[in-house]
Length: 353
Image 1: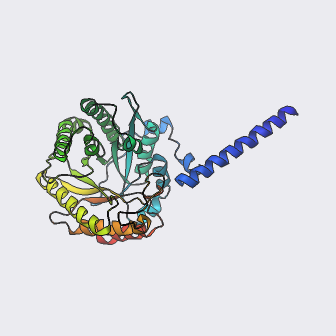
Image 2 (image 1 turned 135 degrees about the vertical axis):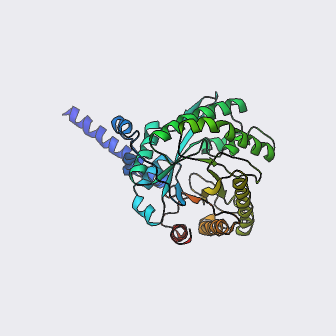
Image 3 (image 1 turned 180 degrees about the vertical axis):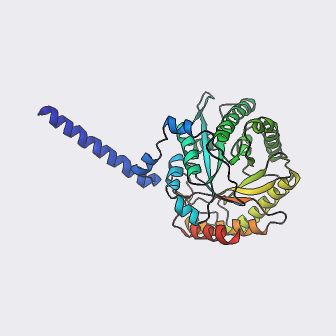
């Protein structure tokens, strides 16, 4: 009898703990226990059995989703039909790495889960972009990196080759050797010119080794590009557009310049340019700001920033860009699902490109 009572008490406490944890997930990160379960990786047998099973399917224009959190990526995939209804044909797997205080790097998630996400996306008919990524919330909080430039370049090379191999095994369409290498480079140099030069040099240096193992399309996925940046050998040059808390008029001026720089870089590189991440957060656990420099609520302006980014995208002179990838579908504080921003993106994807 005493054993039964103890068992019941422990079971009750476990239930309370699960309910509390579930409430925390829903309240802060907008995920629930079902999302956690859906994020469980495939079996080793399924993962190994999927090697070489997928062909490549390149969309004429990339209409994509960048959902860097693995669990939110899984949640978005459960909404695949709705994503396809608004025109999404490409999803992105962000392979996030961190440094400990001693300069050792480690995967900030589970490799099996990330590979499983590639497989699940391919099974649902999406084209896939894979990008190793050091530009994480913890990176932004660091004042100084625990590695020097030479060490970071060596590590970046190791990781890029590893994930280029994995991407080839699963028929990934697009591979970026690193997400926003130029942001990381800014920690090692003192000027924008040096940052652009280091970024271009690293992308050119690693290119032959990547081409040996990956036979899909390569994208230099940058925060921004300089107009004279030569990235010859890459198929695509992508940039991130972000409101930076600017007011709408200032943002239009800035994004117009960013697009023209990317377009010119693509021209001299014999490549095409694209928006590889359109990020317009308005608050939440991943972005602390809620107003722009004019004191206007970012929550109310998200769709306006997106409209401006689309209008200027369509109006940029030269060859038409290759695509547009937005962030995010379900991540709180930057999500577009069920908001006016979803309607804007739907109209753009279905009617304007």
